Amino acid sequence: MTIPSAPLLNLTGIQAGYGEINVLWGVDLTLARGEITALVGSNGAGKSTLMRTLSGLIVPTAGRIDWAGEDLCGQSPAQILARGIAHVPEGRRLFSSMNVEDNLLMGAYARKEPRAAIRRDLDRVYATFPKLHERLGQAAGTLSGGEQQMCAIGRGMMSAPRLLIIDELSLGLSPLLVEQLVEALRSLNREGLSILVVEQDVITALELSTSAFVMDMGRIVQSGRSAELMHDPAIRSAYLGALAA
Image 1 (cartoon, rainbow, N blue to C red):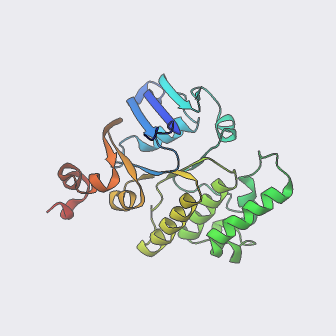
Image 2: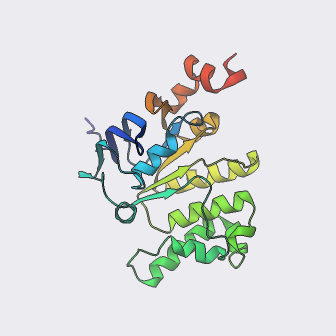
């Protein structure tokens, strides 16, 4: 009999918001080790608030974020990053006047390894996203939207994370660029990186991921294997529009 491994991350009863305005209402979410997991839902469902809470930008008012037996609630973004959770935020948030390589190196600012280890991971980013190598001396603000997203993901990779969180992977990008990013994430996952993708594009998210959680009005309302959710009548009706027919 195979004993299942402990989850990589477990959120229990998370409540959080902005000042007196509560957004998250008792969120429970478990991420399996070594998988791509999707968090889907419409705009305003609370997805980005949950990611900001997970990365330490928002302090929850209740609940627990369990990471390898340690509660991350109340820890700073730098402490959470040091524990192996990297957040690629919605909107990319690059340093627009800095070149591509310097933006990537900013992802490794807290690492203590020798330069050779940093260089190895930089080469890995360039192998994953060859376009970035072509643009390494170019100001990040002059990149296309897809190249900026590659750079933002690459910067996250440079922190050597155990979990990479990507908020709105496909926002504003063409289907071709989204497909390129999806293939890159699949490749990283095959190398052992756990990934959480937060998406409004439910089709992209469910096709990419192994398991998924559906968020609405600050609560997790459904979860399961992505392939099963793709064919769930309620999900198709609520999020897949014409495909529900």
